[in-house]
Length: 485
Image (cartoon, rainbow, N blue to C red; front, side):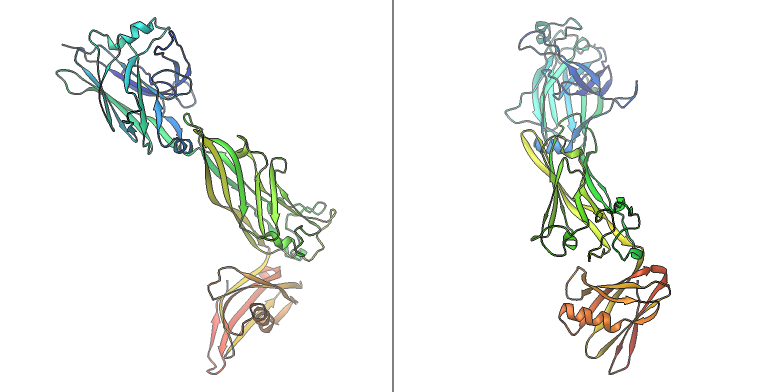
């Protein structure tokens, strides 16, 4: 007869270890080596949530670090601080001829010829187990498969008094890893089966943008923002940045930050009206963190890049962005720049290292937008040509006179707006803007007929502007009203 026993499994940075009939994750903090070359059991603490007495949790693997390691990790039976391993403990003695089986899901056991599989008793000076005593209690390796390892118990050993260290390897780690253990005796095929999710794979890094939300002030002729401080020209809402941050702190295989590059999709040449490679007088565009990052504007390529100044493990804690201020010695900008509604975006490339390799996290990121507190009206469709008359009427019910700016997009596969600038100054009342708008578009596009979408921006309060849009077939005298938005 035999005594029914209890199993214990746990995950650790060096070893699993736990109380009877439990499986819990543990983290090795110190090692105790009693004899050179001998097995050693480390002192460990459970991976637990914050607070005393809370249930054990799975160890967190860095998804990025795991990929650098080739989705595999060594399970090392010899204790060493911050290595990953498994310890096993039975709750009572098993009869001679019994076996212990380990199963894995979410990964595979590494069955390659370079990996050793053993289940050895650990020396532990805190319990008085010497290296020689431990080695006499080692279990014998019987068989291996991608999902299973089997060991036979040694004769005459009280397994419940021993902590065993499993030496193996895990590969093809696809997600959460669960280890299951059970014993088989000469008369019972499966007893004391217990499982625990010993590891979970989580993203270590995330990209967090601080988005622009600047409101262009039409009352200032679109040369500043609604929140611009008059004395300095600074608008906090005009700026944007992005930071690579820690999403989950890993226990195992942490990747290390190296550098970040952010390439804007926006063309900042609007602030370089003379195309000399320098921003116009009264325009200040600088890196948000000028101490630790660099900002490069290329007038030829019309590209803007913010990057790490010095590569290192603090690179991901920086703000990569731009501070955009419109000042001229403390006064408002007096150059010819007119701010336009703009949506900002960029490409983030965050390089990190681990396992003597490097990889780059690449992502497109939205960085916010500038909007107007004036009137922006879109005419989504307008045909024009020799036989088509365009009618555009603008009603300004305010007492303010403001510039009318036009952007257009021809229906020829183009997906970006093109600006023709200011076409008129709109006074209070009704204004026929048909010829003003269409002549500017045809001259800029060098066409005489086609189909076009039009954006009309008026520097007066949006609630005071109404635009009527329609077109008429000159020969047939048919007309159609176009909805605006």
